[in-house]
Image (cartoon, rainbow, N blue to C red):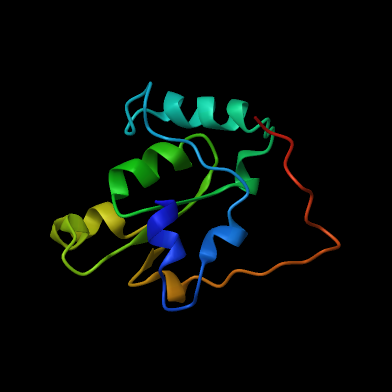
Length: 114
Protein backbone atom coordinates (compact mmCIF):
# COMPACT_ATOMS: atom_id res chain seq x y z
CA UNK A 1 0.00 0.00 0.00
CA UNK A 2 2.90 2.39 0.63
CA UNK A 3 3.85 2.20 -3.05
CA UNK A 4 0.23 2.93 -4.02
CA UNK A 5 0.11 5.95 -1.69
CA UNK A 6 3.45 7.21 -3.02
CA UNK A 7 2.09 7.50 -6.57
CA UNK A 8 -1.12 9.51 -6.28
CA UNK A 9 -2.07 12.57 -8.30
CA UNK A 10 -1.83 14.54 -5.04
CA UNK A 11 1.75 13.41 -4.51
CA UNK A 12 3.13 11.11 -1.83
CA UNK A 13 0.43 10.56 0.80
CA UNK A 14 2.69 8.45 3.03
CA UNK A 15 3.55 11.55 5.04
CA UNK A 16 -0.01 11.42 6.43
CA UNK A 17 0.32 7.80 7.58
CA UNK A 18 1.69 7.39 11.09
CA UNK A 19 1.88 3.58 11.07
CA UNK A 20 0.81 0.67 8.97
CA UNK A 21 0.28 -3.00 9.70
CA UNK A 22 0.04 -5.90 7.30
CA UNK A 23 -2.76 -8.42 7.27
CA UNK A 24 -0.75 -11.44 8.36
CA UNK A 25 -1.86 -13.16 11.52
CA UNK A 26 -5.58 -12.53 11.28
CA UNK A 27 -8.72 -12.63 9.22
CA UNK A 28 -9.69 -9.13 8.00
CA UNK A 29 -13.43 -9.70 8.51
CA UNK A 30 -12.94 -10.56 12.20
CA UNK A 31 -13.39 -7.61 14.60
CA UNK A 32 -10.67 -9.15 16.80
CA UNK A 33 -8.16 -8.30 14.05
CA UNK A 34 -9.01 -4.63 14.57
CA UNK A 35 -8.84 -4.94 18.36
CA UNK A 36 -5.32 -6.31 17.86
CA UNK A 37 -4.53 -3.41 15.56
CA UNK A 38 -5.58 -0.92 18.27
CA UNK A 39 -3.42 -2.76 20.80
CA UNK A 40 -0.42 -2.83 18.44
CA UNK A 41 -0.76 0.92 17.91
CA UNK A 42 -1.26 1.44 21.65
CA UNK A 43 -4.45 3.28 20.84
CA UNK A 44 -7.01 3.20 23.65
CA UNK A 45 -9.54 5.24 21.65
CA UNK A 46 -10.34 3.36 18.43
CA UNK A 47 -12.24 6.35 17.06
CA UNK A 48 -8.87 8.11 16.77
CA UNK A 49 -8.11 5.73 13.89
CA UNK A 50 -9.33 5.85 10.31
CA UNK A 51 -9.43 2.62 8.33
CA UNK A 52 -9.66 3.04 4.55
CA UNK A 53 -10.67 -0.03 2.57
CA UNK A 54 -12.41 -1.05 -0.63
CA UNK A 55 -14.41 -3.77 1.10
CA UNK A 56 -17.54 -2.94 3.14
CA UNK A 57 -17.20 -6.19 5.10
CA UNK A 58 -13.80 -5.11 6.42
CA UNK A 59 -15.19 -1.67 7.22
CA UNK A 60 -18.01 -3.20 9.26
CA UNK A 61 -15.57 -5.36 11.23
CA UNK A 62 -13.45 -2.30 12.04
CA UNK A 63 -16.51 -0.26 13.00
CA UNK A 64 -17.59 -2.97 15.44
CA UNK A 65 -14.62 -2.03 17.64
CA UNK A 66 -15.13 1.71 17.17
CA UNK A 67 -12.68 2.50 14.37
CA UNK A 68 -13.86 5.14 11.87
CA UNK A 69 -13.97 3.86 8.31
CA UNK A 70 -14.18 4.98 4.70
CA UNK A 71 -14.95 2.63 1.83
CA UNK A 72 -13.33 3.58 -1.49
CA UNK A 73 -15.39 2.45 -4.47
CA UNK A 74 -12.44 2.17 -6.84
CA UNK A 75 -12.97 1.82 -10.58
CA UNK A 76 -12.50 -1.81 -11.46
CA UNK A 77 -12.96 -2.88 -7.86
CA UNK A 78 -15.55 -5.35 -6.67
CA UNK A 79 -16.88 -2.73 -4.23
CA UNK A 80 -19.46 -1.64 -6.76
CA UNK A 81 -20.78 -5.19 -6.91
CA UNK A 82 -21.88 -5.20 -3.28
CA UNK A 83 -25.55 -4.96 -2.46
CA UNK A 84 -26.33 -1.28 -1.73
CA UNK A 85 -27.71 -2.39 1.64
CA UNK A 86 -24.14 -3.33 2.63
CA UNK A 87 -22.88 0.22 2.14
CA UNK A 88 -25.90 2.38 2.98
CA UNK A 89 -24.69 3.17 6.53
CA UNK A 90 -21.01 3.44 5.57
CA UNK A 91 -19.07 6.44 4.34
CA UNK A 92 -18.31 5.67 0.69
CA UNK A 93 -16.07 7.76 -1.58
CA UNK A 94 -15.04 7.31 -5.20
CA UNK A 95 -11.38 8.31 -4.79
CA UNK A 96 -8.96 9.18 -2.00
CA UNK A 97 -9.33 12.79 -3.14
CA UNK A 98 -12.88 12.71 -1.75
CA UNK A 99 -11.52 12.33 1.79
CA UNK A 100 -10.74 15.60 3.54
CA UNK A 101 -7.67 15.27 5.75
CA UNK A 102 -6.54 18.00 8.06
CA UNK A 103 -3.53 18.53 10.26
CA UNK A 104 -4.18 20.49 13.44
CA UNK A 105 -0.82 20.81 15.22
CA UNK A 106 -2.64 21.69 18.43
CA UNK A 107 -4.42 18.33 18.63
CA UNK A 108 -2.11 15.93 16.78
CA UNK A 109 -0.20 13.61 19.08
CA UNK A 110 2.62 11.62 17.52
CA UNK A 111 1.78 7.93 18.02
CA UNK A 112 4.07 5.84 20.18
CA UNK A 113 4.28 2.56 18.39
CA UNK A 114 6.38 -0.34 17.34
